[in-house]
Length: 297
Ligand code: GRG
Image (tube, rainbow, N blue to C red; front, side, top):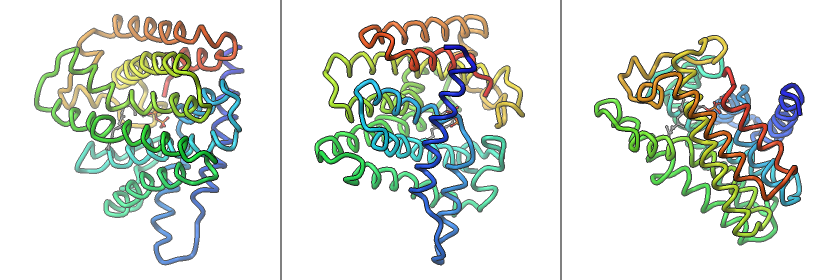
């Protein structure tokens, strides 16, 4: 598959997820409508939709019904977008720009942005728990458990706490790896795991996807650190140079640009090796690994 073909595949998947998100977050006339508007603003304003792509593509390995995978993909994206809204708040990173647009709190005010983040997080679990997502209650509860673990104190929120600590304490390589694994890696991993849960995959297949996602998550983060150092603010769609400004140690500050880029390549290659048992069926996941380390935004 050429890069252009892959970008088309990613774009088609994003369109389908956007439609699902649009349907799940319908505007209405009630007095609290501004909350829905802020949620829609945070979710429907672009983004690469990498996590939804992982859900849909890993689910396809097990022939899961597309509508089911799309609902789970939308739920994972809601959690991702909530984390971006809260991360941009004045009490956190105090960012003005996200995906090339004013951040949610700049557009709607801080209080509404906090509520929009809260509501996206809870809505995600409502979607997963709904029978429309899967008729088997065990599958639904496994999805809820997996996403809660990935997003909570032992996952993304815990990682964000470590990130706050990193502003005043110099972390070493194992500590940064753990931080990034929790902050970004676990949501990426649960996106792959969700496909396997929906497809009632064998332990071997689940393990392979988990190993792929682990390496992909680290490669993704190194690429993100490289973009913060080298990226063009307009293309990236958010402020760059933030890690250095905050005095935060990152993979790039510890390894240097060249070794960091090399390491991202090694991790992406390793990620693909874990997919051997799926054969050609997993080519889209392999292409995603290449996309993640070469992206400009
Ligand atoms: C505030 C609860 C809470 C958690 C915040 C994930 C996170 C923790 C903050 C996001 C800040 C950040 C820039 C993290 C680095 C990696 C990352 C998640 C980048 C953004 O993800 P992309 O590149 O973004 O997939 P798009 O816009 O394409 O969806």
